[in-house]
Image (tube, rainbow, N blue to C red; front, side):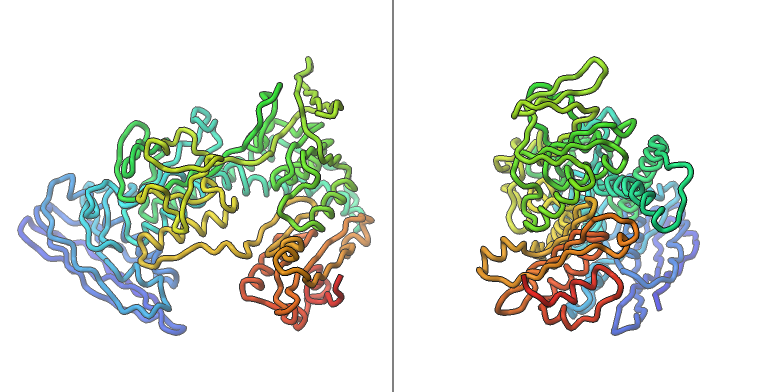
Length: 606
């Protein structure tokens, strides 16, 4: 049930000739897709030959934008080849339009302007696109009708930048994305690359290390279930690091191919702003109608005597061996997660936090519960504690002097004391882009900066620093600018997880937030030992909690500390988005035996 594209090889003389090609696109109606085809003619002049006409596309059901993107790349190659040979072209064919019901927005981009692609002899198939395709801004040739090199230039190849560039290209925009080449000689010390923080020094490698760290617990638990582990397990850290790094490199390659297939030109160089429409890319000036800044954030470390001896999460991903003694400073996601990672790999861990309770912004019961779990496992958690200075010892170890006069010996001291927008040296001031006191770019609801042609999304605007949020922001912006469907990012009820041990999953309001806004609220809470640990003997407890509006019965918040909390909380997020009430939870039959069933069986209020 998908349209087919026909292709053929033909010889075309120098005289005028017309070549008709059939382009099929899917129009989804009810359950089945009906094929609709239209013929578009392109007048050819001064061509020696036409070869490798549009190849047959594999029959498939899926997003029309994927099919359209493949044709877009080939068509742009045609226009670029013609520009180089200075061949006169007839005007592009008129945009193909179709009525819009509002029910199938993915069809809009495909129906706006569709031109069959032709590979000319000597063309560079697979090369990044360098010319625009008529699209959402109307039929264009070469410069998009505005005189700039690109419709959209994206600075930063992280989650927000990659998503926004792909969607914009899918809407017909001519897009380029600049990201520094991965390597030790870049200003970022080799920690950057396509995929941004998440892929290179964030979510992905962290989750792999969390998996690895937890196997030490699994090996202990296996004995309770009859497994005799002989000899004892040993960590081959070098092998693990090599496999982890190979996986990151694989993902880098996937991102590059994904961008190329979407028609986005990838430039592996550092980009800085020059003015409202100009970017310096590795010493070369390029212009764009609209510019997106999506450079993300960078770990922050305070300066104090001996601070040059500390590492951040960036370096933690590339340690040559797991440390025997580790000090983790900080009380947020990253600090809590790395304390778990180091502990799982056998380190003696001390975690220091200058405040009186970590994980600011999380539910109070969740914060207290995790501290108790960490201390029970043997992690030394100290609140209201901070390092005054660090000295490197003769054997290479470190001695930390705390503000209270005590000392801690360590092999690694990692600071996870927050992240700051990576805006230094970006040229924001020269371009007139306003930033706040922390260096974050100031934007309005539509992600527009103080310069109307420059936009920003992701960690650089310092809203919610989560990968899925950056993805949503970049997608909304591209749809708004190039898709003809303005959208705003919804920041309510964003689910999140902390990959501690046990992990945390949370969505919606905390009890403290709900009481501040609504006064008296209904709280349902339970704590229990999971079935698995009835045999292992572990005293690890699972915490589950619901916050409910006292009048509407609407569930305001869902919180969990326990095995696979991150997986459970994702669906809880759907429930909150749908406006689920406590009655909806109560009327749902649980899956037994699971921990998640507690969310639909809690009846007694605290």
